[in-house]
Structures are given as structure tokens and as C-alpha cells.
Length: 423
Image (tube, rainbow, N blue to C red; front, side):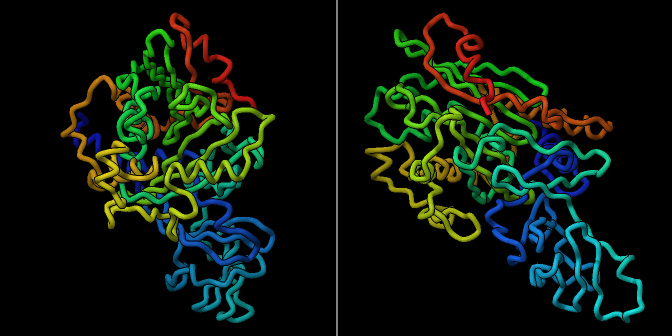
């Protein structure tokens, strides 16, 4: 259970809100690089932390992220002409560079210096890992650029995608860091009684706070076969890392062992964008494009599963195309796609969950600690201190993994090598 006032505190992310100010202390994804594929391409609408923005790539390849509304008469800059290193409003021709500075004002007399006095809101951008990142906080507190291992992995070893989700970021995030639900919501073969997560549906959880967030581990007792151990990382404010190195059904190594995860970015209080990434666990093994697309399809976000705007074809309007006969005979949910199963549960809880009505158990240990850290971060920022995970040095060498370990081998020892970054 979470007090109503605390729930409000960590779910609301608009300008001036406690959690909104926390997110504004980090570099966060604004859009995928593929959304601005070349210089002077069409601008893109962006809504982020409750703010309406427009992104463009100028003639030199630099990315600008501006207030969506022209400071002249508030026309929307999405209609603008992207030309000659600036975005020009089509209403009166005012033109802005990536810093937000007005560089041309053709409806004013040539001798006027008014353009030098006009600047619109602009947020700095940085590209890495196939993502355009932005920092929306105070300039004097701007941290170093992100340095996650998946960003450092070469493009041949990495895949990044994006999905739009119709709910508050926190219930989506909490679904991601909930390890026990995979035994149920993601049981896609009811007949497979040997699958690791169906053999032991109540993992023992351990959560250890770190300077960047926490490490959490789910330990499933497989009897004489040992312990199936899945170690995750939670990196503030809203990123999860996990391993995908052991086949869930057979216990054998995955065909292409990888590290996976998500970043949940608030669009506004009732919507979020999920940045899904995975990369090869082995620097010597690139990920074939065909495998990457198969992986995306398994999770329900392959090319055939998507609508414009990074929305899923299986969605709330069509009940996620649930098949009750499949649910009765083949899978636990009757819904295709691992992430689609998550969306069905998270989007229909209500746009913002009332956590004062919850009853949490031991399986919710990671969720409880995540809430503690988010509340802690709001207090740290209010007191003028940096929150956890702002400094990339705290997290740059971590990753998630999973393994079957012999009984008696502590996970800290058995997974030490796998939990260390390789790129």
C-alpha cells in the first residue's frame, strides 16, 4: 500500500511536480534516431513530461528540440520548413536554430535587431545507441551523457525499438521489475511442465540498493537441478536491465545470449513511451538482423504488430485480440506477444493506479524498493542534491544475466563474471 499523497508524488511528472523535477535531472530518451533519418527531414512532434515539443535535424545533422509553439503568435512549429540550419515557422517566417535562437525574422524591417532578442525554449540533445536523448533540467546541473553498456555496444550487436503505452509510466515500470509474473502472464505453453519458470512459480527475491538504483535477484528452486537465478538491475529513474542468456523452457544457453531491458519515459501523466533495447552478451558475437526481428515478434512488437506512432495493433480498443480458446488450451492469457500481455494488464488498471488500495506481498520486494528510491529522489532534488544514478560512473559497468547455478553456490559468486559489462 502507498499513501495517496505519495502516489501522487511519484506518478505526476509535469513541470514543477516533484517527480517531474527528478526526471528533469537525467538525460532521457526523446525519440529514436530513425525518426529524424537525415538532415532537413520533416520535423517530428514530441510530447515529453507533459510538454509539447517539436524535434528536427538541421542541415548539419544536429538535433534541436524546441517548444512546439512559435514565440511570435504560438503557431505550431510541426508545420515548419526545415531548411538552411533552422526550423522556419510557416505563419510569418520566423526561423529558429537548434539552440532556440531566432536567426531570421523576414516580416520585420531589414534594419531591425528584434530577432536577436527572441529565443524559444530549447532542450539540449545528444545521440547515442540509436536514441536521441535530451536533458530538460537546470543547465548548471546538467550531468554527463548516458553511458549504459547497451549504448557502447556497436550497432551490429544492438537493437532498439519503441512502443507507446496508454498508462502512467510507473505501472508500466513496475510490471517490468516484477519477476514472478512471468510464471503466469508469460506462460505461453501450458503443456510445458519443465519450463524453468513454471517449475518454480514463487521465486525467492533479494533486493540490494546501489548508488544507481538497485540489484534484484529472483532465485527459483529447481530441486536437484540447482537454482535458476535471474539477476536484474534497476537504474534510476526508470530503466531495467535483465539477462536473456538461458532458454526458459530447456535451461540450455540461448542461441544468441543477450542483455535486455526497457526505459519507461513519461509522455504525460497518463501515457508513456517504452524504449526496448537488447544487445549481444558477447562482444565477439554480433546479433543477426533476422534474429532481432524474431525477438521483436516474440514480444509482440515486430513490424507486422505495429501501427503508426509506435502503437500496437493489439490494443485496448480490440481487447488485445484475446483468444479465449487459446487461453483455455495453450497459453495463460490467450494474448499473443510477451509485451502485449504486459500492456493488456497495465493499460486496463486505469490510467494511474490507486496504490492506496493494494495489498503487497513478499513477491513485490523490488516494487517496494523502487517506490522508496523514487520518493527518496524527490526529496533529494527538493533539497538541492543530485538523485541516484545521475553520475554514469555508478552504473557503466553493470548488466543483468540469468543462469542455473548449483545448489550452495551464492549468486554473488556464481554470477560475478556475467554481471560485469564487457563493452
